Amino acid sequence: MNIYVNGTEKKLVITDPKTGCDWTEDCMDGSGDLSWNNEEDRWEMDQDAYEWWVDYLQKREAIENKIADLDDYIKGKVQNEINETYTEFNDFPDVAESAYREATEN
Image (cartoon, rainbow, N blue to C red):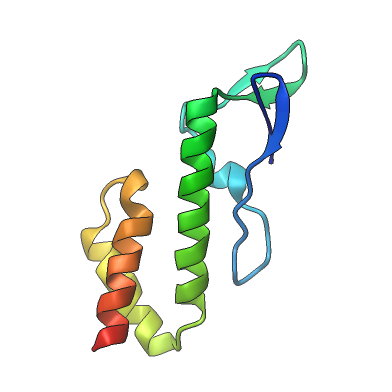
């Protein structure tokens, strides 16, 4: 997804490990950090938001990839733990990482 930050074009990307599809816009939908510039016909955000999203998307994609590589039984344990403890969008990478560690250590 192309984003303009202080007039400079930058990219934000998260790819689904199962399908290979870019789902950045879906992930960011409703975040409030994006604003549409009708005059320039482009998405824009400020530097702080951009840096937060870069970090979040990198962490999220990394844990999603780790989970995707698990066998179905362990993947199910991870998903169950995530479902039981995940409440805030911002916390997903940390919750998923914790669930991954717990499921793969036992």
